[in-house]
Length: 162
Image 1 (cartoon, rainbow, N blue to C red):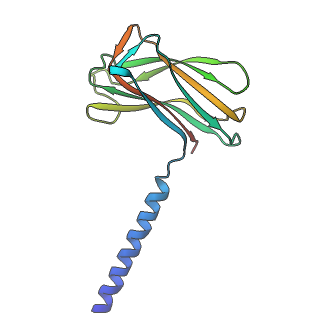
Image 2 (spheres, rainbow, N blue to C red):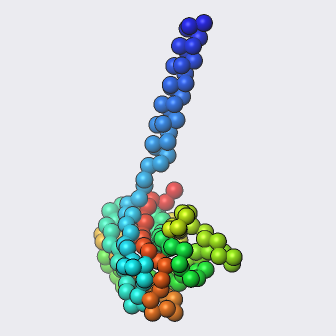
Image 3 (cartoon, helix red, strand yellow):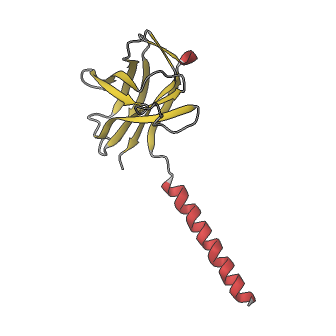
């Protein structure tokens, strides 16, 4: 009976070690860049642009670029319009617009969190950067408010596509 318990104990330990190793590997952060900037007093001024600059060294693989937003319960709208620009190491600046749906029509927040809700919105998926070097993304709020309340932080995440 003693050897059976020892074998069982060894199997359980082995299984726990395997699960731990798998968890570490599967949760590996593949982000090339992942940064946030605080919106002062959670009040995003209309003319205030936030910049995120990062270096791309491997242009042979596709990337996913995600705009991240952390809003509190005081954010008054269902969506958030963003004007953004992309500056490449070579070439002209590209500008575009992104609509971020933060809540459903009943006001339930989509993002995860309790009093601070975090959501991510793809800017580019499976994107091949054209050149190695420094890239800068700039973000401005595109709502009609001169000072938009309830946005506490915005961020940019760049990771190798899955």
